Length: 141
Image (cartoon, rainbow, N blue to C red; front, side, top):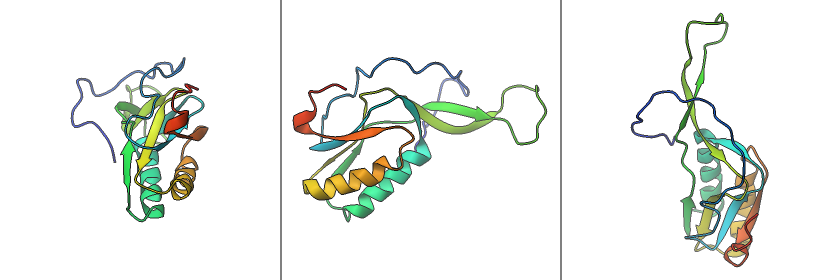
């Protein structure tokens, strides 16, 4: 699972996830990519599940880039715990995703096979995504 090696603070507030992505919204490394269409929050387990399905589909050929990193801790209190007694322990690591953000990129694979692999990865995402190519990369959203 992806998580930071160390952080300045153990816990963070939830914050808001508004607006569009102005960073990481263009294809930088690969030929074809997954782009988020709506806002959401991606978990380290979801990133790993999508990565595994993509690499299995392309039979470990080509190259895949993960363009997101979960650096925000989400806390949860244990089940059947009464209210109070402070904030819960860190449960998982997430990243807020805004519309237009590139999540995965792929290169060195035939486009038809890459589209099939990325479609499988899209099914693992908790928000709507679309597949774009390097030619479509200039379209922001």
